[in-house]
Amino acid sequence: MSFSSDWLALRAPADAAARDWTLARHFAAALSAAPRITDLGAGTGATVRALKPLLPQAKWTLIDGDAGLLALAPAGCTGHQLDLASDLDAALAGADAITCSALLDLCSADWLDWFAAALAARRLPVYAALSFDGRHGWAPAHPDDAVVDRAFLAHQQRDKGFGPSLGAGAWRHFADALKRHGFRVATSASDWVLGPDQPRLLEAMVSGIADAAAEQAPDQTDAVEAWADARRVAIAGQALHLVVGHQDIVALPPA
Ligand SMILES: C[S@@+](CC[C@H](N)C(=O)[O-])C[C@H]1O[C@@H](n2cnc3c(N)ncnc32)[C@H](O)[C@@H]1O
Image (tube, rainbow, N blue to C red; front, side, top):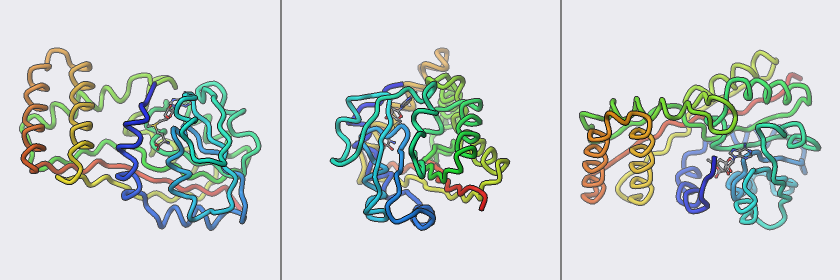
């Protein structure tokens, strides 16, 4: 699945505001002074930018399937183009700790189980931030919010390159798998709270959700289009608010 650098740049401020910084500090405090950290599905390096102040001496390796995104990563990082669906072992090699953000919700149960087992075998701490957890809170409400959301959430479970995706349920599946391996797991909500000051991100959310919902439920295209039009009117009137539920996870291997 491909992501544009424009979309990653658009979402970065919302992600930075949403991260649970207590969990991020908990992760940083568990590492050595100069750890080798590998960020999976790194995109242009949002996790590096976020954690750099907490881990100024870390050596970062960035893994992504898209070399064009890796080319935009902060200076000093090492980038490797790999397909995580097949090359997970190569991706984890040489790391003292693993990070990812906005990745787990693309993944299947089998892949998440493999990931958890691989982390356990190597006793690697992991910080997995900003996984979508299925919650959309629209204000004001629209009568077709539930119809659109149902179709969108079903679309989230399509294969995004890792097998049938767990979508909104992925973060919990991964946390539970790590617990079964004896990891000490902490989770915390890291919701986007969007309002009239973020019209471009709201517009991208409305368009992205409507496109996915219409693809998933072609018989409901008219309702989805009418819903999107109403949402755009509300954005133009500076009246739309949206909470997007996310979850952060920090898991430390058994002592
Ligand atoms: C939603 S973006 C998140 C990017 C970045 N972590 C951030 O928070 O801005 C998901 C990233 O995972 C990468 N990705 C998706 N499937 C992949 C795969 N099979 N192998 C490697 N990278 C993949 C995409 O190229 C994209 O950069």
